[in-house]
Image (tube, rainbow, N blue to C red; front, side, top):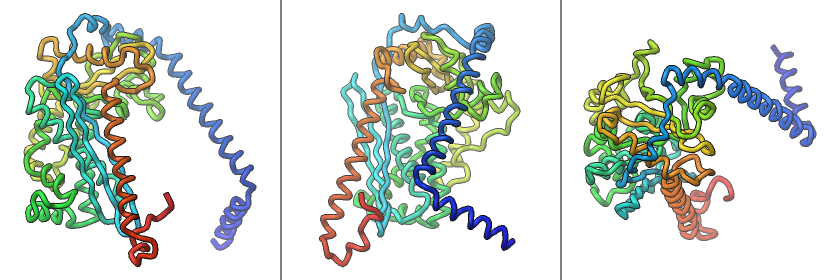
Amino acid sequence: MIELVESVATEVKEKWELDPDIYMADIATDLDRLSESVHGKIADLVSKSGELRKLLLEKEGIIDASEVVETAPLKNVAIIDGAKITHSDRSSSYIITCSSCISQEKDVWKQSSCCARVPHSTCLESTATGLMMMQEVMMAVEVAEEDPGVFVFIDGSRISSLIHIHSFYSNLKKELGNRLDIWRNEAIQQGANAMEPARTFAKFESRDWVTPYLMNPRIVGNLKLVTTTGIVEEYLPEFLSVFDDKTVANALLMAGERTARLPVFNHEKTGKQKPQAILSDSEYPFREEVAKTFEKIVKSEGDESMSYVYYRPFGYHSAYKIEFSNLLLSQQGRFEKLLRWWYDETDSVTSFEEPYRFFLVDLQAKKFVTLGKDILTETFMRRLAEGDENLAIGMSYRSQ
């Protein structure tokens, strides 16, 4: 055992004594091998895409959607996106989140923010993401309820949003004990004067926001980051550890095509275990109501369940993943109008992985939180004048 430890120590010492040029050369070699491997897998996928495309066309798994250009587009659309940023110094950690909404047709601009101080913890990022998702959920429901004719497009999946909120509850409970109760009490005792994140957290727990968020057919998701692998698993299992469905969709779909409707929950067909209801084991006050709602949407078929399609309006752009409630399909012409909106918003836009208005609201949200962090750092350091006895407590861990 002692000989083994000495051998490892010698090997580590030798690595530390390597010339930096040799070390960088090793890294470059590894990266070149990785690049070669990825290129080879892409070439394999492309070589098999023709045969798979033919099969899916025969099964009506690929559908010509070019007729949507003849459909009148949606005229009342609101885009919602959020952003977050975290910062830590020697005393505390800080979270700045926001949710932004743009509706150009109605000239509506909305924004909510949460600037909070929290204790140091390893769940800082999941706490920030959870607060941002709470803001997005509440804003989407508010906008949809205020205007019965508006379509609310969110950046991402509704299910993923709630998974992040679930992580918020579970991680805080695990790491910071009664922190949730402290925020609840602050909101009760101080009301509108309570510090964040107590106000945002209390508003989220003031009513059941999740059920209308899941059930409203006018709330639609635009997914840039894709983790689903249903198509890969069924048709190209050899690529399961390499590619996701969006990559395969980009290899299969031509301009003006979409996939057939794919269920968000497919456990009934695949025989996999039924997903657990989101938030069912959390401290969310309306978890029982959410569990009942989840029982409705978790089915692979039915008006209340959820589906998605990949749609490629133009050949020079990658396919979009669009997630929606099946109720949308029962409203004549609405689904086609939805695709027409995506067509119009991506016409002549070649460098974005999202429709143009999604890019605008995303940019606005990111600029807000970045500016917020700069203001926080500047104002904090002004209060800690050089030589102040508090300086050692409030300084950043590293120079910025």
